[in-house]
Amino acid sequence: MNVKRVITLKEGEAVLRIVRRFGLTYGLHLLLGIVLICAPFFFMIPLFSLRIWGLIAFLLSLLTGLIYTTRLYMEYFWNVFVITTRRVIDIDQHGFFHRTVSEAPYEKVQDVSFTITGVLGTIFKYGTITIQTAGTHVNLELTHVRRPQDIHHLITETASALQVESSGGVRSQKVAHLLDTAADLSDAEARAFLVALQEAVSHGGPEQEHRLQMKSLEAIMEDQTEESAASEEQNIKEG
Image 1: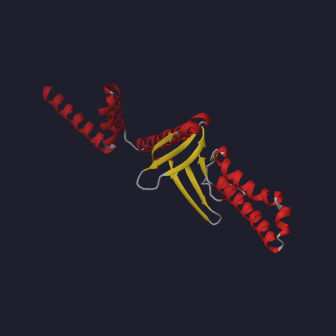
Image 2 (image 1 turned 30 degrees about the horizontal axis):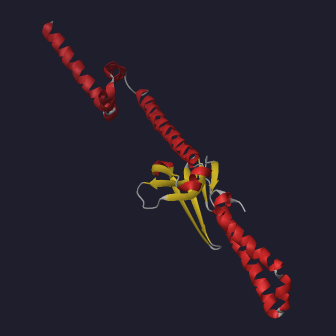
């Protein structure tokens, strides 16, 4: 069985880590399955002395133990968080034939938290990871995770890196568009734009940067053209 068969990775997406529940938390359930499987063999002679009813009890206990243990393994194997470079995928396995797959793209993740409770959780360092998403009531959660702080760090760092990458891509597109537009400017328009750009750089500050980003290139050139015309008119009057 391969978890990657359940999900389809997008172009350029890679799996960073597959997170399952801490195996020790299945200890009591596993012990019960082993008892159901092994008990009939310890009582095989007394059971077989009962003939058909003993054989039925033997097979019933053995079959119940095998089914219970198999289901336990399936829930351990398939209840996972798949952390990729683009999103977190939550696979929930309920029994043999019920599986739910949910996902949270990093751009929709609002909060990532983890909790460690109880004596055993504190000693063995396992807890619960919860991911809250925007625009939906579906929150992803995986309980009994070993070292949840490491998972929390991986998710938050990956989300931050993707945000920086996306911001850089948008900025690069804006710069490329600006260069393409500037290539078609006349000399006067280019000078007007350079003057506006120099003013933005010299003044600096978030307000000036925001004003430059919000104003179109045509508006900047129009302002500079009006200023140049007013300056020429003033020179003519003075002459």
